[in-house]
Amino acid sequence: FYYVNHAAETFLQKGKQEFRLKALPDVLRETGADELLDTVETAVSFHQTMRVKETVLTVGGEQKYLSMQMIPMTLSVDREYLILIAEDITEDVRDRKRQESIREFLTALEGVVAIQDIWDPVLAYLPEISGFEAAAVYQRSIFDDYILFRQEGGRFVPAVDADSIPDRIIRKGEPAVFDKYRMGLFPEGDIPLMIGAKSLVLLPVVFRGKTVACVVLGSSSPLCPDTALQGILESAAFQISTAASRCFVQDELLRERDRTRKYIDVAGVFLAAVSRDGTIELINRHGADMLGYTEEELIGKNWFETLVPARVRESRLAAFQQMVSSTRGDSVSTHKGAVLCADGTELEICWRSSLLREECGSISGIVTSGDLIQQKPSIS
Image 1: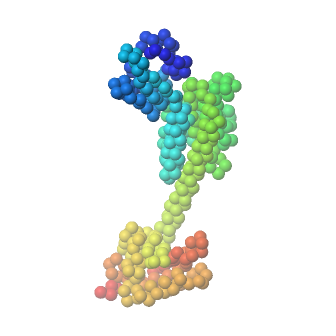
Image 2: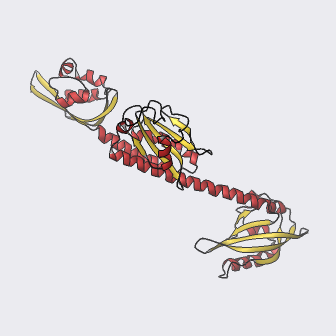
Image 3: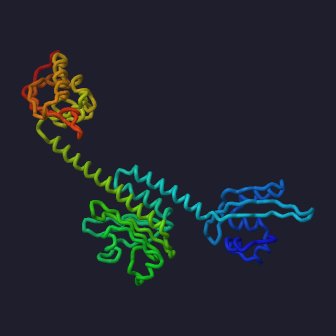
């Protein structure tokens, strides 16, 4: 090295004397930038200016990024130089990678359908986005306290102490950042969530006004997130709560569906739902058993082609089409009619049918229930 400016000394954490004792390849190897050796060789051998858009070096145990130009210069036969002009682009690269991680994180949340599946992308992406090396999830238990559910990259306490500062913050439902300055305001151990934490972030997950879980980010280093990062973390808390709310609502709907299904299955009547085009959308177990089918064998089949005897199929289809095309109210219609069993026999059923409507009011099909009157022998 013939000349090194102050910025290079600061970036590489070396003084002028250290540089004078080393050759360029030595410094590149020490910083893990061995891939630049070929670029240097090309610049020197062919007297060609080389540009490196982005390269990574390890300085003081930390990854840093540079863009660089290598300009060969010959003053005389015995005076050849290689000028290195570099720009520290570490923050730009980190910001770009953070934005990429945020997009991937949001995409992952959009695809989540169960509450327990939320925590995989949370624990995978939030440490990378925030710069905090550890993350944990505390979930609200049936005893109304917050228990450690999962953790990555650090050691967290098994439960949030009741009425502690973290407990009050979590129940309030608003994100909180304990940077190196705020952590210093509390006696050691007053924010006891991550063992040895010097910085913490609390991101409550709220559903219908109650905190159902809390994501905790921790670092053993005294970090100080800037305003932009704090905004990103607050947005992440909102996105997690939104995804969690969607999952909770979906779980409620599934439980309600399963409960309704049980009611339908134990009902001692034949019950079915048929769409406008005649497709069987639902049939209860009792009805399928009466016909000698399983529910799976009938759902998706055409009601009239599968279950209506051929001799009355055309008239019954016409009556059905008239019903689903009518503008009359939703009064229940009653009629008697035969239904075809899997073994070719027929059942005489007393039917009670009502229209099914979409939210906009359009007719989507009918729901019908039936009581057995008598069984007829097979026509064949």
